Length: 421
Picture 1 (tube, rainbow, N blue to C red):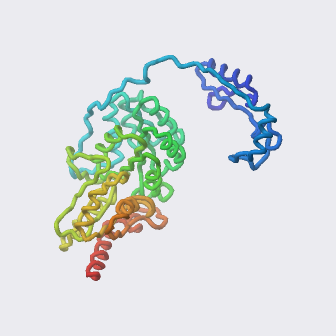
Picture 2: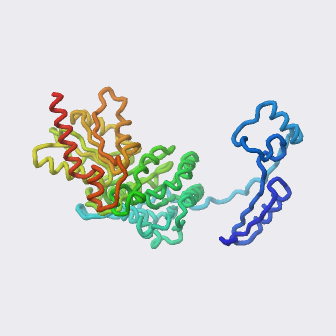
Picture 3: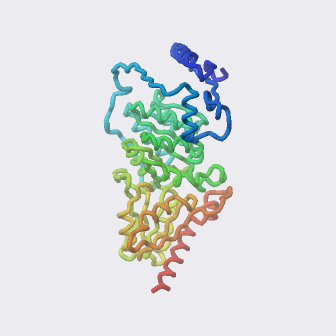
């Protein structure tokens, strides 16, 4: 009643009451109806009725025979149900209608969460695109979609399980659904996400404010497990772009991607790295620094790519050349580019990620090449202790994933390589 629903309380073992309740719900007007059916576990078989210890357990054969007998014996029931009348689909498909994605100038500082909002607003020109948000749309920038396409925006409030459940239901009706909230809050809905993977439904998730990069908000708000969690889901695609252009392009790719796709976005604004005509494909990567004399490969994604680039430029001034890979597609990962880099940079990698050390980008890189005849040696810079609260620079430095930490890692790796020689 408190939520404006009409509750119907019945005996869940009484078929007549069930039938009557369903009929009443069907003709109940505009308010949603909730049927509360009171039941007793094991009802009808006296040996286990209303007794603990039988949940999820099959009955032994002799007990099963007694249960069938007490319940009235073997019966052959056949029920004819009404076949739904043929109807039109929920929406008119619009295929791959072209859209004008947002554009950005190289060097301008734009948060990837802002680019996410810009991108879903642009592809919202396709009538099949729907956006949902968990009452943080002013931060995820899904509010831009709301302003442009209010009839296809759904505010799900602070109810992340319902956010995912609704996204799944809308997707089943043929819509292209995007659901967004803070990455840390998606953990509340993980069971719904994994069940969506089991159902093999197509939904697109955006988790913003990821990692220690959010700084002062502290560890309760820092998503540091999300890449691992999303990589583990059946049919999932996991993306972590570093700038606005790649974010917009990958959001458009997500609209055409089967299964569950997840894009991790960053709170702060960082320089645009790519021209607007740069293509981005799922399963790809970008090599931003390369030379014949590279002694090690730096692999980053999202915010840590900028740390890798800054470190590479500093090292270049002292005559040390390193390769830098933007590993924006965490799953599937670009194995071919990783193998090439391994072969050309002394089989030496440094992976830098704003995520706990387990299950994220570093794990994805190592798993991809683990069975190679000569896998690379990997120095893994990741968050290994509970972060504190402070400025972005201070918290990332404390975690050992900033520019200075990358430079020191390169020195360690090159010194170790020289000693081996």
